[in-house]
Image 1 (cartoon, chains in turn brown, orange):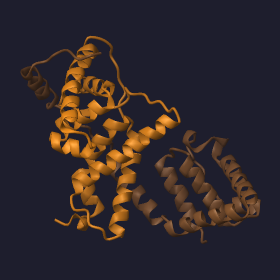
Image 2 (spheres, rainbow over the protein chains, first blue to last red; image 1 turned 90 degrees about the vertical axis):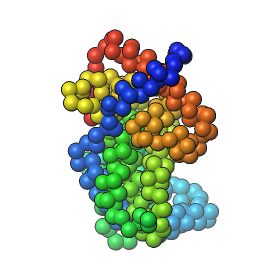
Image 3 (cartoon, one colour; image 1 turned 120 degrees about the vertical axis):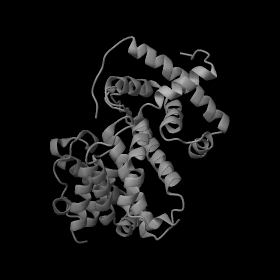
Image 4 (cartoon, rainbow over the protein chains, first blue to last red; image 1 turned 180 degrees about the vertical axis):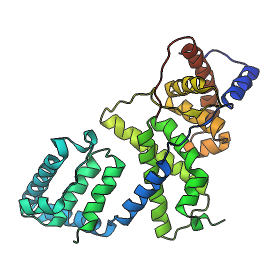
Length: 145
Length: 171
């Protein structure tokens, strides 16, 4: 709908009305949640090994594309099945915890592969509840490479 | 002032509420606003870790928050995610005027995002058209026109809402 013509006085009056309100309140505990989750994620950030894994995947795809892709897809599928309820992350509450070590053991691949696969799921999921994502990253970070 | 010496808590105390309010006015969902801000503060921590100076914290924060929020909107579009636009409070009311705040919030959510952004930044964040143009990378004329049209439309929406339906939920 096209707005009707409005004079400067009416606009000023409406602005004064709007200014009687203030910006939205922050929900209780939001600051602690946001800063805490940012800190945890920062602490668990592993750009070095992520880069290495990404490079490794690139090499694997170049040298043995079928094997690399098969392993990757298997890991992806198994990892998705591990999400409680079998749902994709953006539909799930992710109350459980991914376990890269178990994933790796079941498929006979390295933990790095399992972690990388899980990180891909997380990245591609579009949206994961932050607190659970932090928990997920925390679990991964607590395992030694 | 070299603001990198500020702690993350100090930055939150100084900018948290306006940033949250701004992001909420874009993403229209409380949990998403928190997600967006988590990424923004993670970005600050990374910058701190690299000992890089953030010369002007407020513009940096608004830009980072806006970029993150728009990324989230783009992701929503990709997965065809829909949201419930009524379920939030975009403004805080003076005592005894809670219902008006709900009406105004609802009217704001019904504005096109580009107009809502300019109205919110100008009215509730005290930004000048220059600052908004800089943040949104739009021309001054575009920003001023979005503001004017936004106010006009907002007024009509408010009249419609006040003359009609009742509604509720808040985050």
